Length: 74
Image (tube, rainbow, N blue to C red):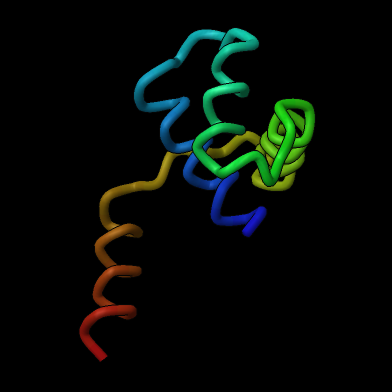
């Protein structure tokens, strides 16, 4: 659940809210995930995932297309 939630959070944040999020951003996500994670946990999980990815969040279209082809056309 953590990985899926933080992946959605990161995708949403960088698509909709490119600036530094406010405290209400994480509170809204806490409500969205039914209170399973606290705002502090969401923030920590986000930082850990972005650090793990070495802050490389851009995916080339060719790489994405290859991934989709491998997953859905086997």
